[in-house]
Image (cartoon, rainbow, N blue to C red; front, side):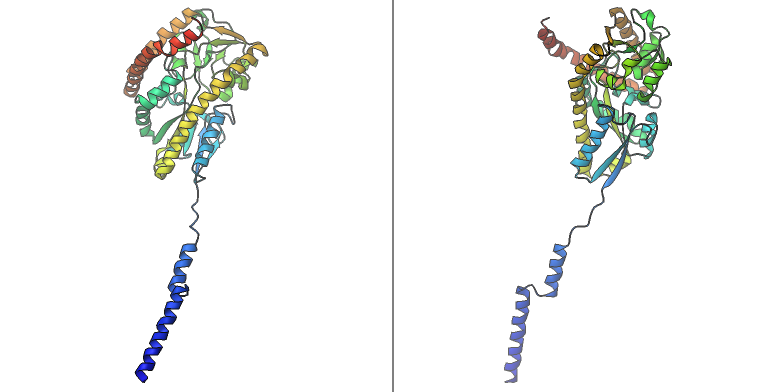
Length: 374
């Protein structure tokens, strides 16, 4: 009888235990459920600073930096937040490259030819006189080996470059006197950065380098006699027409100027792979968006300048353009010969241009001429 009683107790205990399991009443089950219900630990967003060479909210260029930062923040779901600092807010405009190189900021937005003093080959990645159009520049960068070369020359500075915009063909500049011959360039004090500046200096002008924020005052006070900036859309916003009335084309010096974003290499490497891809995708989107904006808005701005502000629109004389083209070939060869990195980049770009020009003779140029009835 005692054995039977013991067996009954064991059976009851077993049933009670099974009941607890079935009802979720065991301590182990409750612990598992609690663990499953616990919310995931909150991941703090990564915060980056972007320094630029542009005035705050300046059309297309300054706003392009803001749009890029917004795209990265939104595409990452807020995991990577980018705050933009206009020129002078965190560092002076022309110190942006150094700030990103040393990690004061993780990201920058500028034009590569601003750094020619420390990286001579950098200027090729903005534009070259009588060089690649925006379409050709993007093709060279993304499909012609240009981007690999750009990354190579920035690597010693702990920076990863990316194209982040393009202005398309720019204007030739603003002048306070007419340019009727090459002699009119002699002694002219002109703001013109990059290789274009070296070309016009070879033609007799005195080149003055300064950030965009200083252009208007310098032109108005006579510190400079002429300036190039970008094109009608930007130039109207800058009010340059108040300081000079002669507006020349074509923009031989900047036929397709790329805008860059540049990123501290250590900061970029520390990102998860998906965030790295988001940054690259956002830069590629920004590259297209800026060119679209310039193309859509330049002509209406030009009409405002001519019709409302009585700007005198003029074409450079053919002999002036011919002289500048000759000087350009000489300058490009000299810069390349004096710097191995520049030679490597120039050779790549030149070979690409020669090939793409042959195609564009029977595609782009032929079509545009046909469209115009020529």
